[in-house]
Amino acid sequence: MSACMDSSGKRDLVSIDDLSSNEIMALFRHADEFREDLRAWSHVCRGSIMATLFMEPSTRTRLSFESAMLRLGGGVISAADAQSTSFSKGESMADTVRVVGGAYADIVVVRHPQDGAARVAAQYAAVPVVNGGDGAHEHPTQTLCDLYTLWREKGELEGLDVALCGDLRYSRTIHSFAYALARFRANIITMPYPGFEMPQYVLDRLAREFGVSTAVASVGDLSGLASGDRGAAYLTASKPHQLALFTSLSKVDVDQIDAIYMTRAQRERHAGESLIDYPRISREMLKSERLRDTRVMHPLPRVDEIDYDVDDDPRSVYFGQAANGVPMRMALMAFLLGAIELDAERPTSFASDAGWCPPVQSVRCRNDRCVMNGEGARYLPGDFRLFRDESPPRLTCAFCGREVLAPVVGSVQTRRFHGHDHPLVRRIKVENRAYFESAEQARVAGFRGDEGVEA
Image 1 (cartoon, rainbow, N blue to C red):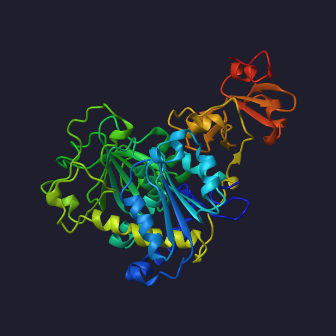
Image 2 (image 1 turned 90 degrees about the vertical axis):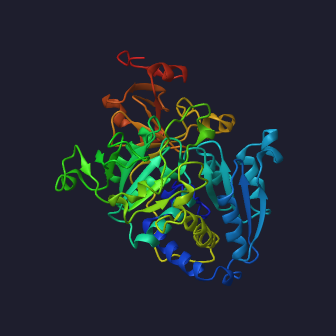
Image 3 (image 1 turned 180 degrees about the vertical axis):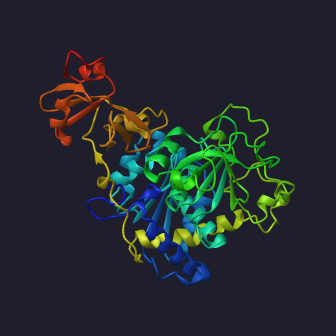
């Protein structure tokens, strides 16, 4: 079942993947309409109630959602502090959204510290669920605001060169934004703080699903942002042979940067690590010729990574970026509540290129921050997306997107297991397969193995 729609027909926004590219562009057009006069739309969602369940601190995300709903004529109920809710008593996300979604509220916005928690909420809630940020996983509505701002500033998205700077490892806004940029065939220049590079699972997905090629980026000496070309990479959705037309695959010289997306250090996710000489945007750095038409973006809050005297530079758009969150979220809420329609096709279901495994109790996600290993350990079965054309099978956690290799495959009917490349595996229907990381794991689950399968 696709994550973007359940059997009742409701739409959720857990990942940016839950919207097609054409739906995103249609939302931009509606946001433009709302933006012209924010006070003119109080009839659109009159009578609807939104619940915000925020288990992590937030200013802009929560307030912009609440402002958006109020401007649409709806009402808001809010849980803005985990300690004042039943979460502090041990109540699960699943139970909370089953109560809140329905009689209490018509749509639920969730922010949670565990990766994948928003997908749990979407699975159990009877009303649309919007991900307001789940751990270090994704932040799709921030991505919509970022894309919308970039589109308004530049007039297009395809072919832009966008630099992602700072903490690329823990920033969920970076991960969602990178997937979206690749989808719209923009090029990404990664400029991380050392040790905070883009996670490998994000790079793997960019390559597998969007055909992204990676090369060394030459960005010159941008004082305060990068030291020469150290650590910079160029990610392009162009095919390798197209990239080779204008440069060697070993290096791409970036003459102009269309946008710099700066992020703060996500200290709440890596407490105790000392960060010396963290990237910083200054007025002096913006004098670089390659930045003459660059837009400076930031999801906010900033700490020290953008000097205050950069605020009045016309290239700085981060406060406008935050303001765009209101009309953009107005468009999204109106759509999910059925108040407006989008003249665009829905996203392709996951089932078109991959299948869902039956619940696999023996395989667990390897991401310690995943909801499956947090509160979900009490009630969530293993739930993985299977890439059928890979050997050995590669399972992707349905909640946080991390991958697990499963070289051992068993039959739930015969209770026997084999190596993934054994001829008998091809005879097992996909819905009857069980996947394991090792023969020992299969034996513990009660399966009998072939002599040749290594533990």
